[in-house]
Image (cartoon, rainbow, N blue to C red):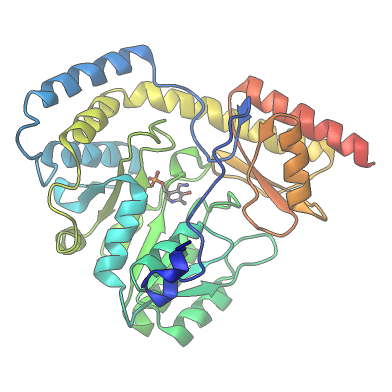
Length: 367
Ligand code: PMP
């Protein structure tokens, strides 16, 4: 039997596993930070209309530069981010994972390194590996905030080409303040200079405003975003970034031509027309997230402050065994490998109740 390792694959991929949150068919799925609300029917109708129109032109390649879509994304960022963003400052791709891949293809690569402060979004390191970029794991404090002094020292010492700051952070839920980003940006510029990427996949759920205004006067800063979470469109695969126009020009050196299909562009444009409705769901989810934090604490769990649509809780002697026990009660949460902790995504009130009932019962069993 030929296995992966019998193939002439790149050495750094040998023995590795692909990214794989389990996709199990259980009643309550709170494991991948998706938005639990299906798109509202009028938006589904609008998508159908826009896609029908796009279908008439599918014999042609799509708009390679996604001008209309990037213009609408710029309008959304300007309206919500308290910072003027123009078409030239925005780039879009198939999910923010692809945005990150394009950034690493452009600014990382063989002989270069990227750093993240872990635990954080594991795909930063995996995409680094996939693009031949060396990966460095930077430290965090015990409360999962970034240890600014230690992080700045790590940057000065290793002189990475790309610095990832995830705010709010996944899987901990912790947001990063502007002072921390500025300190890391200064450290990164003094060391190299390098590109600093703020991954704001969850920012719409945060108690704090976006870090977008920090882009002003900082050409080596990038903010990446996604429609997978706040827009409730994980299945769409649409991520985007805001940065200096030179960064947007640079990623076009590596993007595949016509990478964003006409169907994707049409669907994303329809969703952006319904921004206000979709952001109302975000408000509900923020309330549910705050309720999860409060109720988990009331049950007696240790809970990390959350600015995202998920909550990290513990502590467990054996987090994986606890994950399995919650699953046995029909609720799928996530074991991200953080010792003693699990992560639960905020779902509908009913889903959250089911989750809380399960962990309440398990707490009783163990006390
Ligand atoms: N960044 C972070 C921090 C994430 O948690 C995720 C999704 N889990 C992504 C980026 C990627 O999202 P997408 O590719 O769906 O835009």
